[in-house]
Each structure stands twice: as C-alpha cells, then as structure tokens.
Length: 422
Image (cartoon, rainbow, N blue to C red; front, side, top):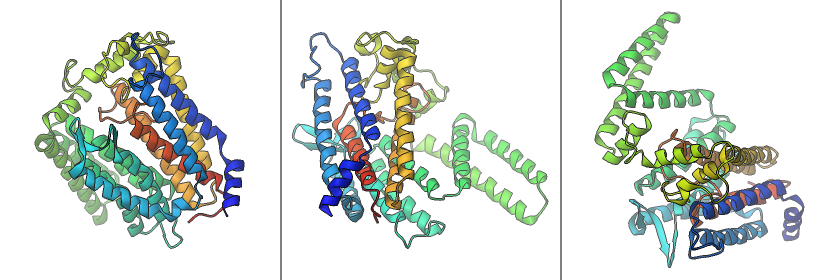
C-alpha cells in the first residue's frame, strides 16, 4: 500500500493547482513587501519586518505541504472525526485560556508566535462534513441528514462567535454551498436570498413601514393565485415568519450590537457618513484602489499604502496595494488567478471517484470563494469590515498555514483518486 501511495503521488499530483498556489503565495509576499515598504529596511529577507516573517511562513508552509503529500491517502477519511473533535475542544479551550487580540479572544501564544485555531478548524470541519456525507448509509434527501450536516459546521461557527471573532465564523457558512452540490433544494437558496434582502430592508426602513409593504405584497400575491384555504394559510404563515424576522433584526440592532458595530453598519448602508471614524478604513481603501487607475503607480510607488493611510494594509486590506500599484489591469489579473483556481478546484472535485474527496474539494472551493468575496468586497465598500484575510496573499502564519493544509490535503486526495476513500 505504501509503495502504491508513493507512486500515485508522484504520477498524479495536479501541478496546475500547485502552480496556482505558488504563484498566489509569491505574489502575496511581494505585495506585503510593497505594503509596508520602508527605505530603511530594503531587504525583502529581513525577518525583523513582516515581509521577512512572511517568507518564514512560506518556507514552513512548503514543508507542511510536503508532509501532507507523503501521508497515506487513507489517513484523512480515517481520522476525520478525531481531527474535528480535537479542534472543537481546542476552540472551547481558547475561550478560557486564549490571548485577547483586538477584542477577540481567539489566539494561542506559543512562545513568540501566535496561532489562531479558528483558521485551522476549517480543514477539520471540511473533513468531518465530507466523512459524514460520504457514508454509504447516508441519504441526503432525509431531513435528519441535512440537519446533522448543518450542525457539523454550525458548532465551530457558534464557538468562534463566542470568541468574538465574527469574521472567521462567517466563513463556516460557505459549507452551505457544498450542500447544494449534494442535492439541497434551490428553494432554500431562494429563501436565503430573500432573508438577506429582508435583513437589509429592515436596517434601512422603519419596522412599521416595512411590515406594511410586506402585508401589501402578501395580499397581492394571494389574490393572483387560486383562492384556496391552503394558499391563505401559507400566505399568512409566510407573513408571520417575515414579520418575526424583521422584528428580530430591529431588536438585535437596537439592543444587542455594540455602538461601534452599529456605526459600521450604518456607514456601510449609507445612513451615516463618517470618513474619519467608522468609515475611515473603507474610505482610504477605495482612495488607494481608485488612485491606481488603469495600470497603477508602479511597484513600490504606492503612496496611500506606503505612508500608512490604509490601516491593516498588509493583512485584511492587502488588495489595496494591488489596486494602487498594479491598477485595474493588475487587480483583474489577481482576480483572474483566483477564478482560475476556483474553476480548477471544481474541475478536480468533479473528477473524483470518491464521494469523500469530491465533497472535500467543493468545501475547499467554497471556503476560498467566501474569503475572496468578503475580503475584496470590504476593500471596495460592498461588505462590512469583518477582518477576513485574502487567501495566500494576506500576511500571517495562521492564515497561510491553514490554506496550505486545506489545499494540499485536496492535492493529496486527488493524487489518490483511483482509490475509493470512505
């Protein structure tokens, strides 16, 4: 078995996926250097600076990737539940014994280094979901199966919310996309979109106005269909649910959210203008990206990022450096590489003979997609600032290591695709 595994890895590694990973990582490293460039520290290898430390994370990530590739392909499905349980326990421990950083108690200190377990719990959750849904006794059309699958990624998300790390918790919602691939009804997606629209409307309008509009829409829809008691009950039920949801949004916003959180939401929705306060990060981010024009200001010539106008410019707002120094063309190139990566992951997932590997592949693609959408969305003012890194680009060991583990587990599973994993 060991020899067959080694042959499979050598012969079947998808080098296109590995190449895309390496290209994005190297581009991220050079952009981190540009984001914090200082003429006093010119060497990109200076480990006293963030870009030098990022090189350390890159080298260690390559070592982690190598270790994953030499592990037996059957290890991941066999130990999926063990890894999931271990990380759930670790997430709980962090709440009580973790290091608080910027109001979030989600870090563990290991000497001079800090590790964020929420980042690594993603791969364990992905493995557990793939393990559960690939069980031969599982029938996805059963409601209990859907509920258990949802609980697998909801549990770590709720624990992470308790750590006050809302941004990381949001990413776990990406696993819903995996469930659609496995047969979740499109009606759920329609309901989800409707809830998002209703959520935004509830924040923009007074509650009584929105409820009046919903009542008119419900009554109008009822009169356009055949008069039946069943339709009347359904219409009334939908109105009650929508009204309860609207009230819950209003109550949560008024009584539960912190003042700074309310401020951010109001600025995002255009209800308030605060360019020097809650809207400062996004405002400076959009200035930086817009100033890049078509082809950018040139590498290391970004003034907004170089002079620290953009906060968190090497982490959450790293895309600003791309926009300012590489312009529209460079930004489009980076987006194109990410889209190519996502398409490649979907293609590889579909060619798997193993249900476990296919589900894991879709889970990886979903996680990267949500990170990409939210991170770039918040840099251009289309999403709230929630502290989500850009995969492979943003500075940080936890982020790069976790995405390396996520990616190379799938590279290993794909190289082992001629075996049926359960």
